[in-house]
Image (cartoon, rainbow over all chains, first blue to last red; front, side):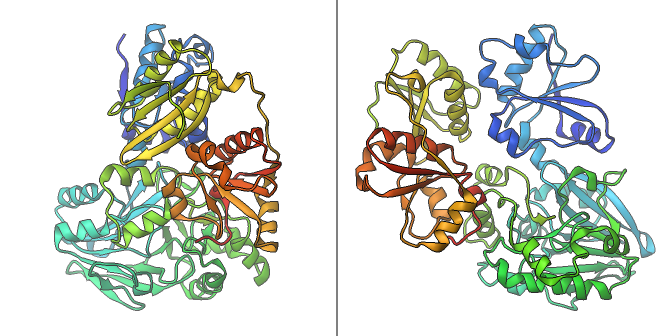
Length: 375
Length: 185
């Protein structure tokens, strides 16, 4: 019996459609505890491949017969070995092609809405890491917000849609993943925008992204308006697209809010965070659809796999927007913070252009969950 | 440096081969002997540590030389004739309080060089786990020493090694720098 390869895109479909899957994760226990494929209808066991070298008999009895079984490891090699051993025992299994690295890099484009005059807005869901990127397309022109490292996916998508990328934005200097913004701008001649307050140490040219900046794409003039909203970083800037969508970056998520500490300045920035969430956003229309730069838990996904919710609903339901007491808010976002993202300081330096690790190292740096939020 | 009895070259091999080969080589070795494994697969460090633990060998440490990782394992080391001493743990929260109250405590950080350089507690002494055996004399045996790594595992190994060599007051900070939110430099 030959073993099948399952692509990250097939796993993504199962996650989005809430289909059953059984995962035998053969990475070591720490890696599994740190980060795994999440899904509402996924069952797991974790048995490291090195405990199965003498035989897989002991796990065979733990495997179900009523759902697909996927063997997962870091890069693929060990899962192929274990899948072949299981296959020899007569168990029908697949392995994850490219392992958790491929899962971390897979982007699932989901259309989140229409823009005036026939334009479209797409959200790129990076299920493996919880990153969300955006592409607005109108009359052959495109703008990208918070692109992830895999620049080619965005370039190919724009080409498929017959659009020229004109503007590339990062809402802030990211600490959990490497931005693809600069690479996309270099490949297309588009302008690359960064908030100047986050860009004091960058070593490349960029266009200043400042409060009130407006750019348009397409002749129907889809407006993209910048709104300064510091707190996660001092430069963090939100966008209002076509007066319908609010892209909040890492300030406000669906079920949580941004953490202010990844540049080491939690106490200094917590006041800004409160001001952005409790004053600046309060002035905006409840009807705006919030599109954040991350999700943390799979429950934040809508049925179609998108991550989006009305601002008015978040004001009612998001705990981080409903803490009346200022001290309590301060404590929540500065004490008991979750662990910092892996390699976050090197990721910041990479996004500043100060270091340029090779691709393999960049992949390693991004392994693991994003951890940009406090709940 | 750790005294090596056998060397295994697993450079250029991807997971699972470094461990498959290590396991084979270990079978041919006598109990208590040290195997040095040369590998370039970055994932090999965590996997060898976990494998050693589950199979009763002692993971001594890893040294990095350019792109090459030098892993050291002692066969059956975990059940070796010398008794294992497990040093007491201190929770990160209690440790943080102590750091904030007393700036003169001795903190030993046993992570690898690049991890240490990325961020460490101000004043921490740095000796990577692989060098602790050779360099522990740089520390005073009568001092209270708080040992820290990323998660608490390497610091535990370092502490056990030091306890066997006469260090009296050792604490393993758990979990470690992964959850540290205090000052760094």
